[in-house]
Length: 254
Image 1 (cartoon, helix red, strand yellow):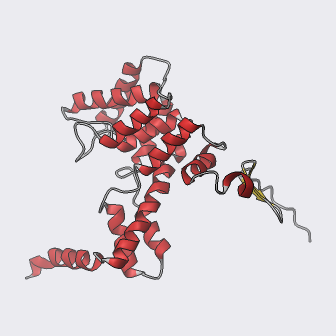
Image 2: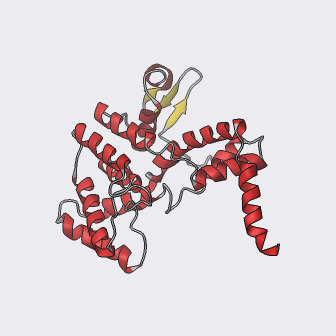
Image 3: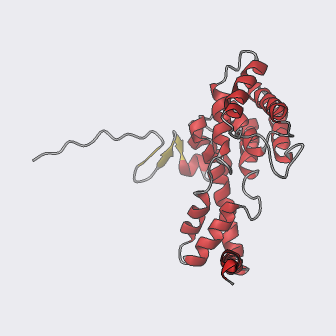
């Protein structure tokens, strides 16, 4: 009996006994010690190394999402570490699993409507179509609004400024700002472009496919969650969280 080898293929990386190649770059000679982690992430998502301006902007995107306090993802990480202290990766994974349409994962939703819009057309009209779609469905417009940061999200404004400084401004940012303005008018609220919306628009400007833009948040937040594991080891919060929740949930039986 003979078996044919399946037609597996990857152009990301390949190895010999003496070399490791990543998108045509020698890992040891061209990348290690010469390329930072953000640039390596850009290479993985685009197949090329960034220009200096793109490097500054992409690294800023990742830095902006590393940390935001005791968010649900950080709490999930801490609680999982409490239950499985032998498995750091499980604790970090638990936090990452919560990066969906409400937290961090909204990058994907924002990038999608930006990339599906006609950026050569009337951006006010394009924004109106986007806003109507979400408002009529009574759904949150991805990348718009924040419970704390208003009237502006300082992280978003910083990222937009860096994009302009790098000479990379484009219609993607104009569109998402218009989406925020029209969404605010339609709902009678102050709805700034938040950091995930800014990242969705900027990632679109950098040519990153919307289907993997959430991965920028995954990369960044993984770093932050490792930090939360370390703090949890040194200064535990999970036992108190568990005790407080349990007491509150069962108080009606007293």
